[in-house]
Length: 133
Image 1 (cartoon, rainbow, N blue to C red):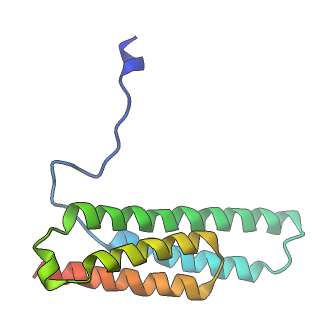
Image 2: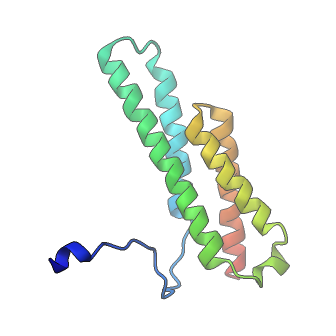
Image 3: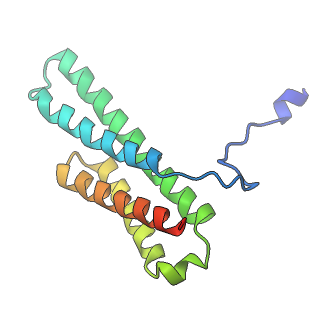
């Protein structure tokens, strides 16, 4: 009976542990780009095997775009603090725009949209690296 009352809790760390990185979101954005390439390479997806690969590639793209969003939210809410606004006055707009771009990548199969996300993620990774100096 007690097991039914205990529910799992998922979080990076609210201690906070102080372990933050940007490699995960950079890799996830690159995975989105690669899935778009694979989707485009399939051509006509009337063949059941190609259709299956199309569905799988779209699912992977969407999962990784969500990973980008999750990592962005984590850095924005847990890592960056008010004192970072002095060095990065556009911090909130930068994150908000990148999160919106990750949503756009989930909604489309478009190289330009994904390229823009990769650019924004790289910029945030650079901000993160600068904040550590």
